[in-house]
Image (cartoon, rainbow, N blue to C red; front, top):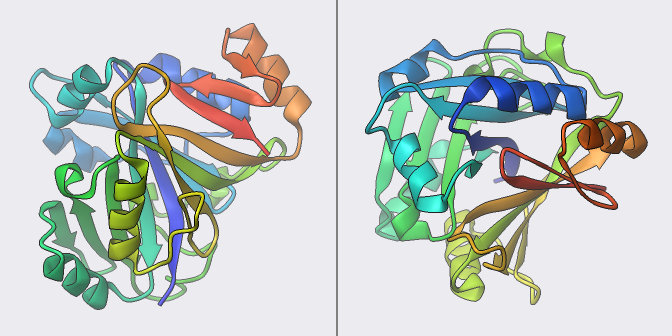
Length: 252
């Protein structure tokens, strides 16, 4: 069985300004807005980054899960680590055997979803999904949350993929061990889990914010363009780092 990093979600107080900065800095384009998230009091935008997706969600009304998450983490930030698997049934059985609660789970004709409760995983929201149907397991294949033709909006002139996610935790070793149990993958001595196409790093909370998705690494073909664009909007935060939607984005 394989497990890939397929999507990263951020959460923002307001969608439009974050969306603009992401497009301007990373050189990406919105491929889809999912009308289904309105049921949860949210609006969203998805951007292809190579053959993966970056999503931003924002609350459109009071008393939403996204709004509560913003309050808990003190503003815009990382929200979800969303993975793609090739066989959902044993993944679900594993989660049930570990006694992990689900925040959401659903099936359509071509998609199977399982979002794990962060109180049972620690660190961040962890989601395991499977796309089914023709070409479903191809790296560039369909991905229902990103709409019917996400590939048309792909631009790789600046960024080419999401190669790592950094989850900050009160107890990194414990959370890494828990995620390793769920994923059925080993945890290295430096508290990293290797997925098929990316890695997950578990680090202490050092930025004054509570547990959550604190950063991502992106493959970058034109760091100069990214950094210059980031400087224009006040988003440059290091020699090879920008901060968008409260998330550190390392250019690798």
